[in-house]
Structures are given as structure tokens and as C-alpha cells.
Image 1 (tube, rainbow, N blue to C red):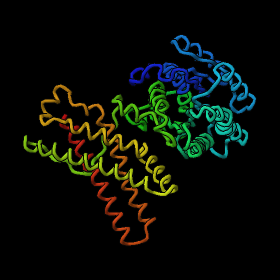
Image 2: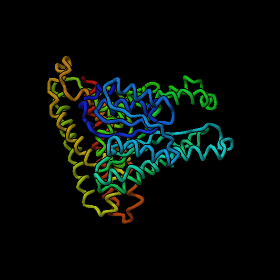
Image 3: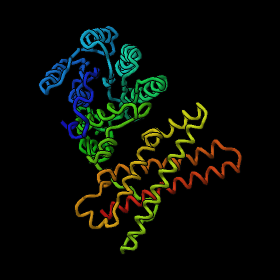
Image 4: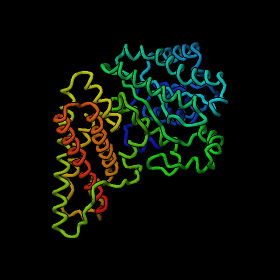
Length: 428
């Protein structure tokens, strides 16, 4: 399984109990296998009988699984699920609301009955599961809860995308309500994944979008993949998020960042706004090494200062700042401090004889370079957007001038470091 390649300790989730709704096929099935490999006792809450096949598969792979036939739109089925899980395992540690229903057609064509059925599975089912199993997590003051989101506003599947957007809001609301607990809540956005469901609906949707099936499935929306992301790759990234759920609390996550961070995929290089310099001599190389060290230390210092500035804010302003930063940058400010510290430490290791070192791939930053660049690009974009935020919030002209100068300098510092890292990429 792909999960084995991520460097996570096998059995890191030993004795954890994970419920995954809609785990009979696709991403849910692969996530169940991944969590079982990590040691969790996995409950396959699936409406179709092929959920039993997933149970058998996981058991054959050495894991522990239990199939409970469940229609999440029916409260009595959720109660039966609760009875089965608590009766056998006595607790719940992880709840993944993955079950979904959909329908295709224009808003005018899709019947109200179909809208109701989709709502009952996608929204009501997730809420019933949360209300049923959250009390167990509150009692033990520990747990992980996920809702699953998708794109917004795509034509011909309005009920599906509307409910997926709502699930993102529900997940964020629940996370905010549980901020002061050890229960971690995040929203997961898979991307376009090679699943039976997508294969089925691509045949219906592609002609409506004026595409062939192959064109529809190869739109390049998945970072690091030309077409669809394999379901086991997606599940591995999701499992990584679950293992480190505390870092993702209150955020919308995806499977690509962990794989990029670990060097399994590489995002397309974006055009730097800062012109890169050609290095043509040993003297210029030494100057470059000195420059990248200085720029790295500057960015590390500014993110540490931002962290302190945020902590000094009042309660509501602090929550808003943390939420905005996490949404734009894909991580909390404190996690960004850790990442910039790690980057700075790696940069300090870059040798002056980089041309020789590259022959042996002995520069430790090589594997994580695309990941660091992606983080910095999001950070630069955050500071750029903060300029518009400041113009809307700060009314005093003198105070605004100071704020804009600070934000422009922060954005420039990050862009300079991005340019440096792109240069390192060409050198190695």
C-alpha cells in the first residue's frame, strides 16, 4: 500500500477506533486500509454489501475491521452503528463523514425528492453521526472528526456541490466550538480522484462540458499529477492529515501537501516575480550563499514577529487573524514558524561547493525544496492580500502608510527567498 511509503510508524494509531462512512469503495475504502495499516480498528459504515469485502480485505492484510451496514440518512441505522461500535470497542476516536449521494442534471431537472435524498445523506447523515459520536470524544477529551468538501458552483451537480460547501462550513463551526478541547476537527478536500464514482459521473458530465471523458479526467487540477490522483495516494495523504490532526484543526486540508512535503510529487514551478541572477563565478556563488542565508533569516524573523503580533491581539482579532492565515497559507502561524525554522536550518547547511555536492545529491534540502517553495508562495500571497485588508480596515492615513510599508517589505522578503530557492533548484 502507498501509505507504507510515507514514513509513518506502523501501528501509530494502535488501539484507536475509526468509523468511516461510505467506506465500501473509492477513497473511503483506501482510507480504511491505510488507517488499519496504521493500527486502528476500522469500522466500515457502508450501505452496500461490498462493505463486507473491504472488511475481509483489511483482515487479510493483518488489520482489524468491522462492516456495519449503515444508511446514514436513517437515525435508526446510526443508532445501530453506535451500538455495534461501542459494544465491541467501547469508544470512538476518529469519525470520518465520507458517505455521499449525488444526482446529475440542471437545477430545473433535478427533482425536489432527489434534493431531499442528497441532503439527508450528505448533510443530515454527517450531523447525526457527529451528534452521536462526539459525546464519547468529549468524555475522553480526545478525538478526530472530518467532514469532506469539494468544489463550489459546478454545473449539473448542484445538490452535491451545495452540500459539500455546507459541510466545509459545518466542519469549521464544529472546530471553533471545540477549540479549547483535545478534539481535532478539519475539513478534507480530496481533489479529482480515480474512483468508481468519478469514473461513472465523468461519462455523464464530460459531454455536458463539451469534453471527451479523457479530457474531463485530465484537467490538471491535481498538483503533481497530470490526470486523476490514484485513490490510495489520496488516502495516504488523508491518513497523514489524520495522524497529525492537531496541526490541521479548523482548516481545509488536501492530500497533496503531505506528498509534496515528503518528496513523492512535485508541483509545477511558478514564475517568480523576482528576477533570478545568473551565477557565473565562484565569487558570485559565495555572494549568493551569503544572500540566501540572510534572506532566510529575515523570513524566519518576520514570521516569528507575526506570531508574536498575533498573540498580542484581542480574542476576536486573534481568532480572525489565525483563521485567515491558516486559510491562505494551509497551516497555522505556529506551524509556519516551525517550517521557516526548519527551512533556515536547511539553508545553513548548503555548502559553498554546491556544484560538487550536487553530483552526490548530498544537499539535504533537495527533497523538500518544492514543498518549501509552495509554503513561501502561499505566505507571499497572504501578505499581498493583507495589503487590501489593511486598506479596508485602517482609516488613519499615517497608520495605513506604516502598515502598507511593513506588508510590502514582508512580501518582498518572502519573494526574495523564493527567488533564491528557485536559483538553488537550477544549481542542483
